[in-house]
Image (tube, rainbow over all chains, first blue to last red; front, top):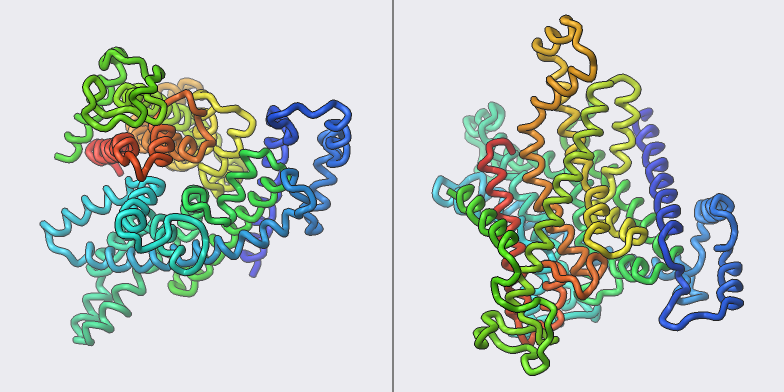
Length: 303
Length: 259
């Protein structure tokens, strides 16, 4: 209990630290969010700055924004005035969650299959699989996305090349996000599986002559899953980075695209909002990963 | 086997960057409106031309130089930064160590690309800013490993011997810690350089890294992407270079022993 509280406190501190860093970095940035193609008259510029309180001292702004953010008011977008940040995020988040969730499940299935195969394969095949997985890991998601679009949407016409129109538009982007982490995950899973296969409890279970299925699932896969669960935090970070790229490429209106656009537009409130959502997500996933890890392997609890 | 292949490809890249850009006799920025999107094998333009009639091969070569330069610089900077943090943390120990490690955890929780993107806001869009942003985004892994290694070295008997002979802390650091960390640092560097290359190409691809007139593997892939249905080879060549470079570093790293 005490440990959970400590972790929660650390998470809140992390979110606060990220908030502070993002705030000061974005205010230090040269140029203002209202500098566009045409120059605004100085009076209008001054009015705009004072409307958004950007003309006050930085420390005053910081406290103001911190208080507001903590109370749930994340301000409104600079680029599209009148639209609140929470509205933008509320619209983008479900899209990203569907996409990311699908990608996560896909990569888990791919990794479990490939990992099991790698761990059980004999020498020539095992070597080839290792080679394939290293190429697999080196494939950047934007290249994979380009390849998928070229083959499945331009050549074969099976799936739409962009936009968010229904379930058929989930397929390509989620695959583009899932494949690289799956290769990495498969390697970790395979290593942990082959360790399990050599361990006494597995050999004992095999000696007892229980069915092949129960042996593999209960005594092989389940104990090896811990290695997979323990990297849930870093893994979700890689999905998050994948979402910047893939959502921008496929023109999907999710959080990743909102983030990239808000950085390009210097839309401070939106940058803050998306970064906070990201951090909260990462913290949450790490906590969930630890909790599942303890549940699967009670030995961890004793540490 | 693979390691040798990787090292050979890396040597090829080094030769490519040392040779003058005059290799093709063409300037990478010269535009020729008659040759817009010229196909592969056009006389004088082996890889054809891009949407502004610039020679693809010379752009690919100058882009490779930029991408490698960024990758290697990010590798060196982030390794040095991480080594400094890890060494300090492991050497001083105590409360100082735990403070540095908590700070590290905060930073480590955030993905490299998220940090780099936000830093690019402040830094502008030059080569140097990309290097700084990616280095600050990705030194944390190095610091962890270096700290663990430092703690190991601290327990060695040669260190106790040196200390009991009255060596000053500075001498201990320079004569005992640093030389013993070098092999580890080398391997870490080999794993950080491809990280830098991938980071640059992703940033530039998204339009958050280098800005248009500059060419790098990332900007070339970005331009190739826009012309994808018409001329897929404009995307294919820089893409192939990125994949081969990443693989070469990975294999060379595995060859050099530690993992």
